[in-house]
Image 1 (tube, rainbow, N blue to C red):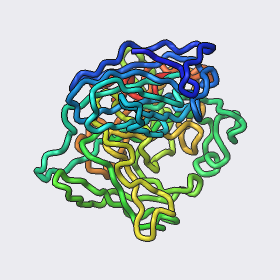
Image 2 (cartoon, helix red, strand yellow):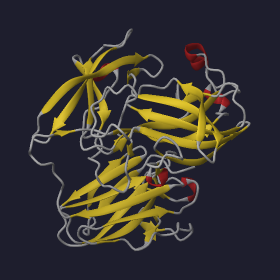
Image 3 (tube, rainbow, N blue to C red):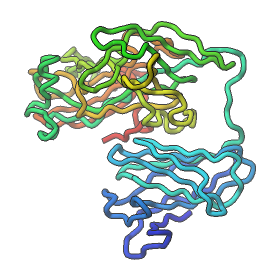
Image 4 (cartoon, rainbow, N blue to C red):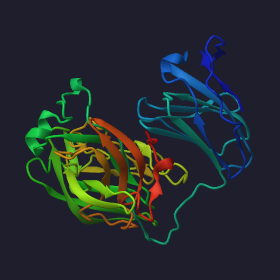
Amino acid sequence: MTATVLVGGLLNDAVAAPKPPPPLRLALGGSVFWDLEQPESETALPACERRACLDFDLSVARGGKRLRVAMDTDGNSTPEVEVFNPAGKQVAVDYGFYSAEVYVPNPAPGRYVVRVRGAGSESRFRARLERVVPKPPRDGKPLLPNLRLVPPYEFTMAPEAAAGFDLLGCNAYEKAEYGARRCLRFSLGPANVGHGPFMLKFPAMSGLVAAEPVYQLIAHSDGRVTERQAGTALYHKTHAHHHHNGFGSLHLLKVVDPRRGRMIPAGTGPKQGFCMLDFLIADWRSFRNDPRNSIRQDCSLASGPTSTQLGLGRGWADIYTYGLDGNYVEFGENTDGRYVVRSVADASDDVLESDETDNAGYAYIEVEGSTVTVLERGQGLSPWDPRKRLADDLMPHNP
Protein backbone atom coordinates (compact mmCIF):
# COMPACT_ATOMS: atom_id res chain seq x y z
CA MET A 1 0.00 0.00 0.00
CA THR A 2 1.35 3.42 -0.88
CA ALA A 3 0.64 6.90 0.38
CA THR A 4 0.80 9.63 -2.24
CA VAL A 5 0.59 13.39 -1.88
CA LEU A 6 -1.38 14.79 -4.81
CA VAL A 7 -1.91 18.21 -6.33
CA GLY A 8 -4.81 18.18 -8.78
CA GLY A 9 -4.27 14.46 -9.22
CA LEU A 10 -0.53 14.76 -9.98
CA LEU A 11 2.25 13.66 -7.68
CA ASN A 12 4.15 16.62 -6.23
CA ASP A 13 7.78 15.58 -5.87
CA ALA A 14 8.76 18.88 -4.24
CA VAL A 15 6.95 18.08 -1.00
CA ALA A 16 8.04 15.13 1.13
CA ALA A 17 5.18 12.71 1.70
CA PRO A 18 4.30 11.67 5.25
CA LYS A 19 5.46 8.25 6.36
CA PRO A 20 3.06 5.76 4.73
CA PRO A 21 1.14 3.24 6.84
CA PRO A 22 1.70 -0.48 6.31
CA PRO A 23 0.01 -2.12 3.31
CA LEU A 24 -3.78 -2.02 3.57
CA ARG A 25 -5.34 -5.24 2.32
CA LEU A 26 -8.88 -5.98 3.40
CA ALA A 27 -9.96 -9.61 3.48
CA LEU A 28 -13.64 -10.49 3.74
CA GLY A 29 -14.68 -9.86 7.34
CA GLY A 30 -11.33 -8.23 8.10
CA SER A 31 -10.36 -4.82 9.44
CA VAL A 32 -7.23 -2.70 9.63
CA PHE A 33 -6.13 0.23 11.79
CA TRP A 34 -3.33 2.69 11.18
CA ASP A 35 -1.98 6.00 12.39
CA LEU A 36 -0.66 8.77 10.22
CA GLU A 37 2.76 10.25 10.82
CA GLN A 38 2.80 13.61 9.07
CA PRO A 39 3.93 17.22 9.45
CA GLU A 40 2.48 19.21 12.34
CA SER A 41 0.59 21.58 10.04
CA GLU A 42 -1.54 21.15 6.94
CA THR A 43 0.44 24.02 5.43
CA ALA A 44 3.32 21.57 5.03
CA LEU A 45 1.19 19.61 2.55
CA PRO A 46 0.24 20.75 -0.95
CA ALA A 47 -3.35 21.60 -1.81
CA CYS A 48 -5.57 18.98 -3.38
CA GLU A 49 -8.60 20.78 -4.76
CA ARG A 50 -9.94 22.71 -1.71
CA ARG A 51 -7.59 21.52 1.07
CA ALA A 52 -4.35 19.70 1.72
CA CYS A 53 -4.97 16.01 1.19
CA LEU A 54 -3.51 12.52 1.20
CA ASP A 55 -4.48 9.49 -0.91
CA PHE A 56 -4.19 5.89 0.26
CA ASP A 57 -4.60 2.68 -1.72
CA LEU A 58 -6.91 0.04 -0.27
CA SER A 59 -7.11 -3.46 -1.73
CA VAL A 60 -10.63 -4.86 -1.18
CA ALA A 61 -11.46 -8.57 -1.40
CA ARG A 62 -14.50 -10.06 -3.12
CA GLY A 63 -17.86 -10.73 -1.46
CA GLY A 64 -18.22 -7.90 1.05
CA LYS A 65 -21.64 -6.46 1.86
CA ARG A 66 -20.31 -3.12 3.09
CA LEU A 67 -16.98 -1.30 3.13
CA ARG A 68 -16.54 1.30 5.85
CA VAL A 69 -13.62 3.70 6.29
CA ALA A 70 -13.25 6.15 9.19
CA MET A 71 -10.87 8.90 10.26
CA ASP A 72 -10.31 10.55 13.65
CA THR A 73 -8.40 13.78 14.19
CA ASP A 74 -7.04 15.59 17.23
CA GLY A 75 -9.74 18.26 17.07
CA ASN A 76 -7.56 20.95 15.48
CA SER A 77 -8.95 20.31 12.01
CA THR A 78 -12.15 19.01 10.43
CA PRO A 79 -11.80 15.58 8.78
CA GLU A 80 -13.10 14.80 5.31
CA VAL A 81 -13.04 11.31 3.80
CA GLU A 82 -13.76 10.33 0.19
CA VAL A 83 -13.66 6.87 -1.38
CA PHE A 84 -13.14 6.20 -5.09
CA ASN A 85 -13.94 2.74 -6.54
CA PRO A 86 -11.65 0.78 -8.90
CA ALA A 87 -13.20 2.68 -11.84
CA GLY A 88 -12.15 6.00 -10.30
CA LYS A 89 -15.71 7.06 -9.43
CA GLN A 90 -16.41 8.74 -6.09
CA VAL A 91 -18.73 6.38 -4.20
CA ALA A 92 -18.76 7.85 -0.68
CA VAL A 93 -17.93 11.10 1.13
CA ASP A 94 -18.34 12.39 4.69
CA TYR A 95 -17.42 15.66 6.40
CA GLY A 96 -17.14 15.45 10.18
CA PHE A 97 -15.78 17.29 13.16
CA TYR A 98 -13.56 14.99 15.22
CA SER A 99 -14.60 11.89 13.26
CA ALA A 100 -15.85 11.08 9.77
CA GLU A 101 -16.91 7.71 8.37
CA VAL A 102 -18.00 6.58 4.93
CA TYR A 103 -19.92 3.48 3.82
CA VAL A 104 -19.82 1.71 0.45
CA PRO A 105 -22.54 -0.96 -0.01
CA ASN A 106 -21.71 -4.12 -1.98
CA PRO A 107 -18.19 -2.99 -2.95
CA ALA A 108 -16.70 -4.57 -6.04
CA PRO A 109 -13.29 -6.16 -5.46
CA GLY A 110 -10.18 -4.26 -6.44
CA ARG A 111 -8.15 -1.15 -5.66
CA TYR A 112 -9.94 1.71 -3.92
CA VAL A 113 -8.51 5.15 -3.23
CA VAL A 114 -9.21 6.71 0.16
CA ARG A 115 -8.70 10.49 0.02
CA VAL A 116 -8.52 12.38 3.31
CA ARG A 117 -8.41 16.09 4.08
CA GLY A 118 -7.99 17.82 7.40
CA ALA A 119 -5.62 15.23 8.84
CA GLY A 120 -4.25 16.82 12.02
CA SER A 121 -0.94 16.04 13.66
CA GLU A 122 -2.63 13.16 15.52
CA SER A 123 -4.86 11.36 13.04
CA ARG A 124 -5.83 7.72 12.86
CA PHE A 125 -7.76 5.57 10.42
CA ARG A 126 -9.64 2.33 10.27
CA ALA A 127 -11.31 0.24 7.57
CA ARG A 128 -13.47 -2.87 7.58
CA LEU A 129 -15.01 -5.15 4.93
CA GLU A 130 -18.19 -6.53 6.46
CA ARG A 131 -19.66 -9.91 5.52
CA VAL A 132 -23.13 -8.73 6.48
CA VAL A 133 -24.65 -5.42 7.50
CA PRO A 134 -25.57 -5.93 11.18
CA LYS A 135 -29.25 -5.69 12.04
CA PRO A 136 -30.96 -6.10 15.43
CA PRO A 137 -33.18 -9.15 16.01
CA ARG A 138 -36.89 -8.50 15.60
CA ASP A 139 -37.79 -9.63 19.13
CA GLY A 140 -39.12 -6.27 20.27
CA LYS A 141 -36.54 -5.79 23.03
CA PRO A 142 -35.47 -2.24 23.94
CA LEU A 143 -32.22 -1.01 22.39
CA LEU A 144 -30.88 1.00 25.29
CA PRO A 145 -28.05 3.53 25.30
CA ASN A 146 -25.07 3.30 27.63
CA LEU A 147 -23.75 6.70 28.69
CA ARG A 148 -20.26 7.78 29.66
CA LEU A 149 -18.21 10.96 29.69
CA VAL A 150 -15.04 11.10 27.60
CA PRO A 151 -12.24 11.25 30.22
CA PRO A 152 -11.14 14.90 30.66
CA TYR A 153 -8.18 16.09 28.56
CA GLU A 154 -6.54 19.34 27.34
CA PHE A 155 -6.02 20.64 30.87
CA THR A 156 -5.00 24.25 31.40
CA MET A 157 -4.96 26.91 34.08
CA ALA A 158 -3.81 29.60 31.69
CA PRO A 159 -6.13 29.77 28.66
CA GLU A 160 -5.71 32.44 26.04
CA ALA A 161 -6.34 35.93 27.44
CA ALA A 162 -7.99 36.90 24.15
CA ALA A 163 -10.80 34.42 24.87
CA GLY A 164 -11.99 36.50 27.84
CA PHE A 165 -10.33 34.59 30.69
CA ASP A 166 -8.59 36.21 33.63
CA LEU A 167 -5.17 35.21 34.94
CA LEU A 168 -6.77 32.48 37.06
CA GLY A 169 -8.45 30.82 34.08
CA CYS A 170 -12.05 31.95 34.71
CA ASN A 171 -14.30 34.16 32.57
CA ALA A 172 -16.70 36.87 33.68
CA TYR A 173 -19.81 34.69 33.28
CA GLU A 174 -18.35 31.91 35.45
CA LYS A 175 -17.34 34.37 38.16
CA ALA A 176 -20.78 36.01 38.19
CA GLU A 177 -22.87 32.85 37.79
CA TYR A 178 -20.89 30.29 39.79
CA GLY A 179 -18.54 32.36 41.95
CA ALA A 180 -15.50 30.91 40.17
CA ARG A 181 -12.12 31.88 41.65
CA ARG A 182 -9.41 29.69 40.12
CA CYS A 183 -10.45 27.45 37.23
CA LEU A 184 -8.77 24.19 36.28
CA ARG A 185 -10.09 23.90 32.73
CA PHE A 186 -10.35 20.86 30.46
CA SER A 187 -12.23 19.38 27.52
CA LEU A 188 -14.68 16.48 27.80
CA GLY A 189 -18.03 15.34 26.49
CA PRO A 190 -20.82 12.74 26.63
CA ALA A 191 -20.61 9.38 24.85
CA ASN A 192 -23.11 6.62 24.04
CA VAL A 193 -21.59 3.14 23.80
CA GLY A 194 -24.86 1.20 24.20
CA HIS A 195 -26.95 -0.98 21.88
CA GLY A 196 -29.29 1.81 20.85
CA PRO A 197 -29.51 5.57 20.38
CA PHE A 198 -29.85 8.06 23.21
CA MET A 199 -32.81 10.30 22.36
CA LEU A 200 -34.55 13.00 24.40
CA LYS A 201 -37.44 15.24 23.44
CA PHE A 202 -39.22 18.16 25.08
CA PRO A 203 -41.69 20.84 23.97
CA ALA A 204 -40.22 23.60 21.82
CA MET A 205 -39.71 26.92 23.57
CA SER A 206 -39.71 25.17 26.97
CA GLY A 207 -37.15 25.63 29.73
CA LEU A 208 -36.50 29.29 28.92
CA VAL A 209 -36.94 30.43 32.53
CA ALA A 210 -37.27 27.29 34.67
CA ALA A 211 -36.32 23.66 34.07
CA GLU A 212 -39.08 21.59 32.47
CA PRO A 213 -39.53 17.81 31.96
CA VAL A 214 -37.85 15.94 29.11
CA TYR A 215 -38.71 12.47 27.83
CA GLN A 216 -36.40 9.66 26.77
CA LEU A 217 -37.33 7.97 23.50
CA ILE A 218 -36.46 4.27 23.55
CA ALA A 219 -35.99 2.42 20.26
CA HIS A 220 -37.03 -1.25 20.11
CA SER A 221 -35.68 -3.92 17.79
CA ASP A 222 -39.08 -4.30 16.07
CA GLY A 223 -39.15 -0.63 15.12
CA ARG A 224 -41.36 0.65 17.94
CA VAL A 225 -40.41 3.75 19.92
CA THR A 226 -41.66 4.27 23.47
CA GLU A 227 -41.03 7.14 25.84
CA ARG A 228 -40.51 7.80 29.54
CA GLN A 229 -39.76 10.89 31.62
CA ALA A 230 -36.02 11.40 32.10
CA GLY A 231 -35.28 14.53 34.11
CA THR A 232 -35.46 18.14 32.98
CA ALA A 233 -33.98 20.54 30.43
CA LEU A 234 -33.12 24.22 30.68
CA TYR A 235 -32.25 26.79 28.04
CA HIS A 236 -28.66 27.97 28.45
CA LYS A 237 -28.62 31.67 27.59
CA THR A 238 -24.86 31.84 27.05
CA HIS A 239 -24.61 28.76 24.82
CA ALA A 240 -27.96 29.65 23.15
CA HIS A 241 -29.37 26.13 23.23
CA HIS A 242 -30.98 23.64 25.62
CA HIS A 243 -29.08 21.42 28.06
CA HIS A 244 -30.18 18.18 29.65
CA ASN A 245 -29.84 18.93 33.37
CA GLY A 246 -28.08 16.56 35.73
CA PHE A 247 -26.46 14.67 32.88
CA GLY A 248 -22.98 14.93 34.33
CA SER A 249 -21.01 15.76 37.45
CA LEU A 250 -17.40 16.90 37.89
CA HIS A 251 -15.27 16.43 41.01
CA LEU A 252 -11.69 17.28 41.93
CA LEU A 253 -9.99 14.87 44.35
CA LYS A 254 -6.58 15.52 45.92
CA VAL A 255 -4.35 12.43 46.11
CA VAL A 256 -2.88 12.27 49.61
CA ASP A 257 -1.49 8.72 49.41
CA PRO A 258 -0.53 7.67 45.86
CA ARG A 259 0.59 4.21 46.96
CA ARG A 260 -2.79 3.30 48.45
CA GLY A 261 -4.87 5.57 46.25
CA ARG A 262 -6.28 7.60 49.14
CA MET A 263 -7.98 10.82 48.03
CA ILE A 264 -9.94 13.64 49.64
CA PRO A 265 -12.53 15.99 48.04
CA ALA A 266 -10.92 19.19 46.76
CA GLY A 267 -13.45 20.89 44.47
CA THR A 268 -16.38 20.54 42.08
CA GLY A 269 -17.38 21.87 38.68
CA PRO A 270 -20.64 23.47 37.52
CA LYS A 271 -20.97 21.56 34.25
CA GLN A 272 -24.07 19.36 34.28
CA GLY A 273 -25.80 19.62 30.90
CA PHE A 274 -24.90 19.20 27.25
CA CYS A 275 -26.43 19.85 23.84
CA MET A 276 -25.35 16.59 22.20
CA LEU A 277 -24.31 15.97 18.60
CA ASP A 278 -22.46 13.11 16.85
CA PHE A 279 -18.92 14.50 16.69
CA LEU A 280 -16.64 11.64 17.73
CA ILE A 281 -16.60 7.84 17.33
CA ALA A 282 -16.85 6.69 20.94
CA ASP A 283 -15.22 3.23 20.75
CA TRP A 284 -12.67 3.21 17.99
CA ARG A 285 -12.04 -0.54 17.77
CA SER A 286 -15.59 -1.89 17.97
CA PHE A 287 -17.19 -0.84 14.63
CA ARG A 288 -20.50 -0.75 16.50
CA ASN A 289 -21.41 2.86 15.77
CA ASP A 290 -24.33 3.77 13.54
CA PRO A 291 -23.81 6.26 10.71
CA ARG A 292 -23.29 9.81 11.98
CA ASN A 293 -26.48 11.85 12.52
CA SER A 294 -28.68 8.77 12.23
CA ILE A 295 -31.07 10.37 14.74
CA ARG A 296 -32.56 13.87 14.79
CA GLN A 297 -30.46 16.24 16.88
CA ASP A 298 -31.36 19.88 17.37
CA CYS A 299 -31.44 21.53 20.78
CA SER A 300 -31.89 25.09 19.51
CA LEU A 301 -35.08 27.14 19.67
CA ALA A 302 -35.40 26.92 15.90
CA SER A 303 -35.86 23.14 15.82
CA GLY A 304 -39.62 23.25 15.24
CA PRO A 305 -42.94 24.50 16.56
CA THR A 306 -43.87 21.39 18.55
CA SER A 307 -40.84 19.61 19.95
CA THR A 308 -37.07 19.70 20.25
CA GLN A 309 -34.89 16.59 20.24
CA LEU A 310 -31.32 15.98 21.31
CA GLY A 311 -29.17 12.95 21.95
CA LEU A 312 -26.39 10.74 20.61
CA GLY A 313 -26.44 8.04 17.97
CA ARG A 314 -25.25 4.61 18.92
CA GLY A 315 -21.47 4.59 19.22
CA TRP A 316 -20.98 8.37 19.10
CA ALA A 317 -19.71 11.04 21.48
CA ASP A 318 -19.71 14.82 21.63
CA ILE A 319 -16.86 17.09 22.72
CA TYR A 320 -17.00 20.33 24.69
CA THR A 321 -13.64 22.11 24.55
CA TYR A 322 -12.01 23.74 27.57
CA GLY A 323 -12.84 27.26 26.41
CA LEU A 324 -16.60 26.79 26.77
CA ASP A 325 -18.41 28.13 29.81
CA GLY A 326 -18.50 25.71 32.74
CA ASN A 327 -15.79 23.33 31.55
CA TYR A 328 -13.72 23.47 34.74
CA VAL A 329 -13.45 22.42 38.36
CA GLU A 330 -12.87 24.97 41.07
CA PHE A 331 -9.24 24.67 42.11
CA GLY A 332 -9.52 27.43 44.72
CA GLU A 333 -6.76 27.47 47.33
CA ASN A 334 -5.48 23.97 46.57
CA THR A 335 -1.72 23.55 46.47
CA ASP A 336 0.56 21.87 43.95
CA GLY A 337 0.34 18.11 43.86
CA ARG A 338 -1.44 15.17 42.28
CA TYR A 339 -5.17 15.15 41.67
CA VAL A 340 -7.93 13.10 40.07
CA VAL A 341 -10.60 14.85 38.04
CA ARG A 342 -13.63 12.53 37.96
CA SER A 343 -16.46 12.88 35.46
CA VAL A 344 -19.71 10.94 35.81
CA ALA A 345 -22.41 10.65 33.13
CA ASP A 346 -26.11 10.47 34.02
CA ALA A 347 -25.20 11.59 37.51
CA SER A 348 -28.88 12.13 38.40
CA ASP A 349 -29.76 8.59 37.16
CA ASP A 350 -32.63 9.89 35.02
CA VAL A 351 -31.77 7.89 31.89
CA LEU A 352 -32.59 4.22 31.38
CA GLU A 353 -29.34 2.52 30.27
CA SER A 354 -28.13 -0.96 29.42
CA ASP A 355 -25.36 -0.65 32.04
CA GLU A 356 -25.69 1.65 35.03
CA THR A 357 -22.28 0.77 36.51
CA ASP A 358 -19.79 2.25 34.02
CA ASN A 359 -20.66 5.95 33.94
CA ALA A 360 -17.42 7.29 35.45
CA GLY A 361 -14.25 8.52 33.77
CA TYR A 362 -11.14 10.11 35.23
CA ALA A 363 -7.91 11.95 34.57
CA TYR A 364 -4.94 11.61 36.90
CA ILE A 365 -2.93 14.85 36.79
CA GLU A 366 -0.04 16.65 38.44
CA VAL A 367 -0.29 20.39 39.09
CA GLU A 368 2.74 22.61 39.51
CA GLY A 369 1.88 26.30 39.50
CA SER A 370 -0.10 26.87 36.30
CA THR A 371 1.37 23.77 34.62
CA VAL A 372 -0.82 20.67 34.43
CA THR A 373 0.63 17.30 33.41
CA VAL A 374 -1.67 14.40 32.54
CA LEU A 375 -0.37 11.15 34.04
CA GLU A 376 -3.23 8.85 33.04
CA ARG A 377 -6.77 8.93 31.60
CA GLY A 378 -9.37 6.22 31.60
CA GLN A 379 -12.83 4.87 32.30
CA GLY A 380 -13.44 4.13 35.96
CA LEU A 381 -13.31 5.98 39.25
CA SER A 382 -9.55 6.52 39.47
CA PRO A 383 -6.18 4.99 38.56
CA TRP A 384 -6.67 2.58 41.48
CA ASP A 385 -10.02 1.27 40.24
CA PRO A 386 -9.52 -2.47 39.49
CA ARG A 387 -12.11 -2.20 36.68
CA LYS A 388 -10.48 0.79 34.99
CA ARG A 389 -9.92 0.92 31.25
CA LEU A 390 -7.08 3.12 30.05
CA ALA A 391 -7.91 5.71 27.42
CA ASP A 392 -5.41 4.55 24.79
CA ASP A 393 -8.24 3.63 22.40
CA LEU A 394 -10.40 6.61 23.26
CA MET A 395 -10.32 9.79 21.20
CA PRO A 396 -9.08 12.39 21.61
CA HIS A 397 -5.62 10.92 22.04
CA ASN A 398 -3.75 11.24 25.30
CA PRO A 399 -1.94 14.61 25.37
